[in-house]
Image (cartoon, rainbow, N blue to C red; front, side, top):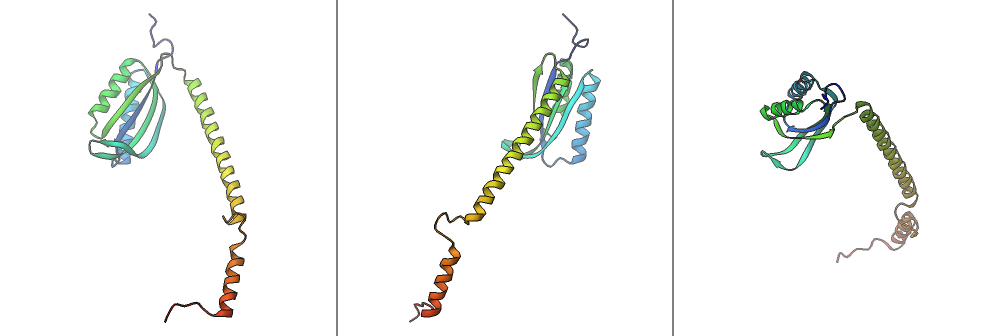
Length: 172
């Protein structure tokens, strides 16, 4: 059996949910600690993203909101065990999930695919925004009345009729 350290290392992704009230300083300390664990066990941290605070689908330890962090890294199985051990010991960690990405994880291919996905997402968002602007431009011309004409003409006609007859009142 080939030694995984000589060739490509397996890739893993871990999503971590911490308490929403956790300070930025504590979150930064946790991320640095996890990065140190990965590098100490002959791994490499490929990506670490802060996804922000989100509402949880259900309460976890009486918490309805959580701070999400996403990590992609390479390493042996020892990296995963030590990383999860550190996460279990941390008091602010609500949940975490580690997924094995590939037995021979290619970092360059991952980053290339990620940039392609981000570019496609940006392009779709720009197209969506262009369609939204086009619809708004069309709506501005109609004032949402369709073929019923301009409401201003109707209001002007009603005002001139009231001027001729006087205000209609039910006060008697």
